[in-house]
Image (cartoon, rainbow, N blue to C red; front, side, top):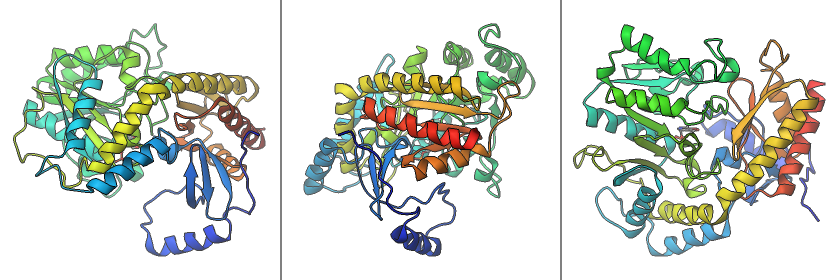
Length: 442
Ligand SMILES: Cc1ncc(COP(=O)(O)O)c(C=O)c1O
């Protein structure tokens, strides 16, 4: 019998209510919980809350549990390593899992020549490391990033982030010298142009306007970019965007940094989303799905770019043995079958959403690659007025019906289930989503 969600209590249930009350006393109020889910355990695509309710998870813990919750192969790798060595610090000592994982990642990342890997514990740390390396290597002080970008919340990464003002409020001054420019968000092109007639004007604008008026290109260390914008709304730039931007960067000796924290590690059906655009990057930031839920971030750069000296950057916990083993088990599964499944089920999800789009006016745009899929909600297809107030209501309804989804951007919903998702689970998720949309938007 196919599995279905099971909601036995009002949400939140009595145990969840008690824990949330306790949380409100002791846990930082800066977290943004969108609905009152208190998780007890999970396996595959299925999450059990503390009251025995069971949910179908299309969030994968914000695109992290790539191999499904508690994948047995990953859990075994963690258990085996936990019995041998928990920590020794790769900053001061050598150990096998860190060296082996660095070799594996260096060989996975496309591009000519040797690569080296720096390990941290999170996406922000991977970006932070890229930020520092770009300065170190180029000895330049300026950087470029995109509106809508999310690169993390530590002060350096936050300076590159341009997603929501609440993330920056009261934290200024941030790292100086960063200029944000429009991303290739074709559904809402700021230049009011259409691809392909635009001839990628958004890239040309950087050279013709930005570099001539305010930002001397010879002072720019790096351009930071998400291959597909994540938190900003699951926005897929048009073909040719990254290639043209990379070529522009090369013309002026600027490093192109691909933040693959959300889009990487097989989520889009290829190991790295940049591969969809047949474009290169000089530096890559990885995290989230890399270790199926164990904390790990990685920054990868060509050996001759990663030329900083001993002591210039490090982390006590970064690349700890357990996270490294979890990452190796994860990559093994991605290569064996999960990237293929991401393409297959991603197509099914996209087709399903396109079908729904025919019936529901409020689904203005459907976009994505593999299992990184977004649906943008609008009040009116013509005016594209963002349906910002409908989005939380749809997410809440879905939760009450047993489907876990999250928002992104101002008015979009993201679908980022584990890469182990089955066709039946995709269909089930779509049908619950449709019920929620129908109840809110009709
Ligand atoms: C593209 C991107 N970069 C960086 C980060 C920051 O990662 P973390 O929350 O692990 O610091 C995120 C998190 O959502 C992300 O999506």
